[in-house]
Image (cartoon, rainbow over all chains, first blue to last red; front, side):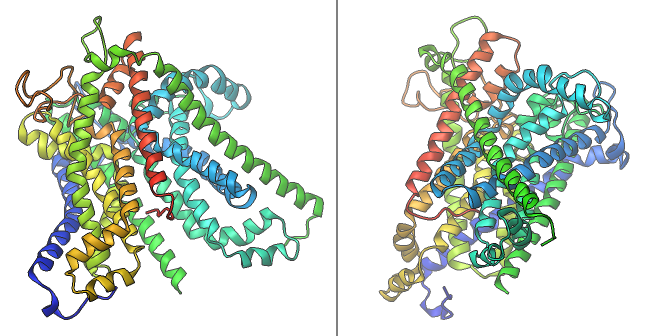
Length: 312
Length: 294
């Protein structure tokens, strides 16, 4: 739709309407910047007090007023990493099933079911994780892992169930639908003629996927991974229930930990009357904000390139 | 292709096929497993008292009536603030500034806002509203949810309006209709199903949110009606800390009491059922068209 260049044709109500919509659109930018500014302002006392040491210090003692973000950053990254290791390949092969293998009717039903998983509120994942998954992890899965892979440093210590591994698994379940849905759309966009060119000489389904579909859609697939990652990194309620809220750093996935989001959720209430504690938690929020911001910008630049790539 | 034996290639292919089928089944199993637990553990808590009695204190007739009403009010407030602004933003992006540099920035920031963790929205609203007003309030909770809805509604509105063929716009303009009438009466009408779907999905998304309400709406164990009698006796005072389902579920689930945990499951069933129902209705409304994704 080309805009009419003749300003004379525009009447006053049109101008007002246009202005109103413009203001609303700008409000999105304004809110986003305002959030960043407020977090920065709230974090300022903590930044002044602790400096850059905050990022690498794992002390956490609200009573003595000593704080460091290291354990929270570590927990956030590790739980997200576990989630990605589980959900990325699983999302990819489920998408493969939906596009290449199943009957269209089954594909639609299974696809919708996986998407329904995304509609379940995160607090439900958290509760279910705590009351159903944690006991299973504690009594079945983790002892089994320890028995067979106990020599690995990541499977040390007493399996408690409330730990990094369980948090990672819950996160994986939560981001699976996003990765699956986007990857499915990407695989569906691969022109059939390209795939047929692979099938013609006798390549198998997996060979065609590996040599044709994945390279063709690699940008979209990576974009899907970014989306999943961005979601996992800031997820709050589900993690809060199962991660254990412990400000320690342990190489074992059976140790309880904390994430930035879970610390804010659980400790902000205690910090309301302690300005420095509150500022520390807001600084944790600022760190999370910066991390997700960077990932989102990267994802957008990536997808923007993708669109340019498609046009050319 | 590498020169591997046909048997090996076929074996690899079948392994991948089997794995992908298993992965799909595992995904479905987890969905059914979660829903099954929520349904069976929740249904026993959903008696009459659940819908008539208020939350806390312990050891009396317990229910979640005040939390249900509070969640409805907070979500309604979020919708009233978030949907119109989101729709208008979507109109700007699709109808006025499609290629304008401003739109590029708005889209960019809308996508980033959508990816911003909801707990940070909660902290933000705490600092700009709760601290300034001096107390937790249902109003601030509604604003937090509205901020989460805003970019979602804006982007889906834009996507859906873009699908409306230009011929419709041109014919309306050719008849002499001003642009705003063309948009409201022609473009909106053509895109009605999609717009309703977008709004419903945005409502579904925020109604299950917990993190942004923790330090904004907070929680309350009472009905916070304006008046005991009077015409405002059905209206919640949104200047008070307002009880809501999700924060109550969080507190009850983390509590040591068996009865509270049972109530939390009941609340979970209610909120999950409502969210899934809205999502499914949204899809049914839109079934004629192609789903657009942001």
